Image (tube, rainbow, N blue to C red; front, side):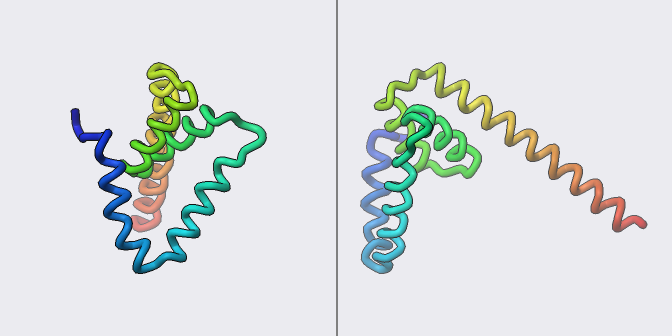
Length: 113
C-alpha cells in the first residue's frame, strides 16, 4: 500500500486541531460548507462522492481522497464505478493540459511576433 489510509484520516484530523484552535472561524466555515454540500436534492450521495473523488485527484488532496473513498463505499459505490469516475477525471485533466498547451503556443506566437 502507498499509504496507511485507515489511520491517515485520524492523523490528519488530529493535525488539523492546531488550525482549529488558532483560527476556529475558518474551521466552522469549512464545516458549514462541507455540510451544505451534502444537502443535495437532485443528485444522490453516490454521485456526489464520484464528483468529490474526481475533484480530489485533480487537486491532489490526499485527505479528500481518503474521506471520499470511505463515503463513496458507504453510499454503495463499487470499485468499478469509482474507477470509471476516475477515468472521467483523468480524461478531463488531459484535456485541460491540451487546452493550456494551446495557450502556451499562442503565447509563443505572440512573443515571437
